Image 1 (cartoon, rainbow, N blue to C red):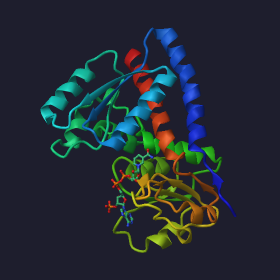
Image 2 (cartoon, rainbow, N blue to C red; image 1 turned 30 degrees about the vertical axis):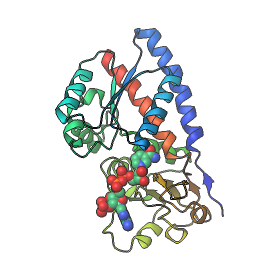
Image 3 (spheres, rainbow, N blue to C red; image 1 turned 45 degrees about the horizontal axis):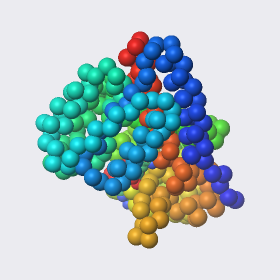
Length: 284
Ligand code: NDP
């Protein structure tokens, strides 16, 4: 058996194309162009690439995007001033603070300073709470992309056993919550899980968000499972690989998302969706 590939690049393009039309219609109706403010602190090369890709996608979809690139020695107070200014800027409907932030800045404090109405990443405690309630206003972009990818297979989620490996606030926990709200039976695994391979083998849907290259091997996957690889890892030889061993898992799984070209492009597409949502809310 060789898994069907879940083509995140193509799926993301379809979402962006549809969104481009929605943005145009929204602007015609309201006279408002949805706007995203991207805050990048310091010179982390990976963050710079992510920000560049996000800006490019915004431009293509007809959203306005303003880049706030501040030096790495910016103080927390200085960064909070910028966030407060963006919170009150009527042309800004979404604020994205690119993580990670330098160690002298408390990310939690900064993310809490973003207005929940402009919190397109869905990281503010208010939006986290709404997500847990099953009444999400802004769904975090990567988890939202993961769900769209699973749904794109046409397989039902309800009643399936979903295993999420990773319990971070930005990926693992929200993915698990979204799967539970779609009536999957969800197991969340982490570094202290006992006999992880056995737990993973029980999964009809397996989501890997670990940050360890090619960690999920073929023997950890049930025949026919849907496997979503969230991981992005750069190997010493420069290759980009996921948390899933693609070659081995392709031979077992029913569906597999590739890296690159899987969850990454979907994350960006969902950011655009959330920015339009922010603008809709601002004019409502
Ligand atoms: P974190 O480092 O915040 O979380 C990693 C999780 O994996 C933790 O819960 C950790 O467990 C768990 N873990 C680590 N080692 C093991 C192990 N040996 N067995 C089981 N679980 C383990 O990472 P993120 O959630 O932020 O990101 C995960 C991956 O997804 C990364 O590769 C990241 O680059 C990628 N990513 C991709 C995005 C995209 O757009 N495609 C967006 C965001 C992230 P514990 O809690 O016990 O420490």
